[in-house]
Amino acid sequence: MTRFFRGLFTLKRGPWEMVATLLIAVGVFMLMQPFVMWAYTYSFIVTLVGTVMFIIVSHFAEQE
Figure (cartoon, rainbow, N blue to C red):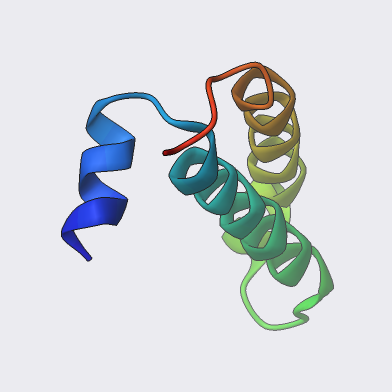
């Protein structure tokens, strides 16, 4: 667990890719759920932020 947080603080690829992937998954879930309108409303923005974040993070250095 401390390795994950250390990777976040030192801008390593692995932990940040995981965060970006989770954002994409949450955005897709928000898009597909039929119950909460605000979640549906912001789903595209969350998915877009996760996708752009994944593209940027893929240029970070590998974790040792």
